[in-house]
Length: 138
Ligand code: GCU
Image (cartoon, rainbow, N blue to C red; front, side, top):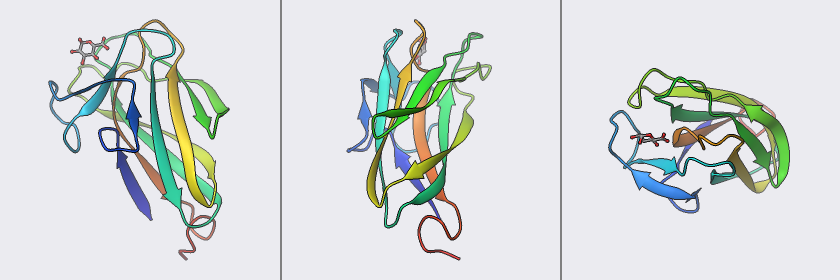
């Protein structure tokens, strides 16, 4: 099963502004963080049972400069400097995926910028549980 978590919907946290000035986003907007190291977004995902899942992060980066982020799960960095390369324009969206281990119940996923550009514009994350390992699905 795949569940989408929009960055503009609580309990997600956008440490910046929810914006809608570039088309192609899902929901009612995207998160535009400050151009600074440490700019962050945070999602709270819910799964009934613990297990492996794939996290897909939708973003746009209209610059030609990578905007890497440290990805942490429940406060522990699980991937350092995941690349969010330029997508060609701010209205061109792309997805970055990585495997994560989820708790039963809620899991906090945080993206924190490691360079002065801050994060790309972040639209949502989708969590897809691995069959048999996440949500009891076959
Ligand atoms: C532009 C763009 C924003 C983007 C920003 C940035 O201002 O319109 O959507 O967030 O650049 O460099 O991060």
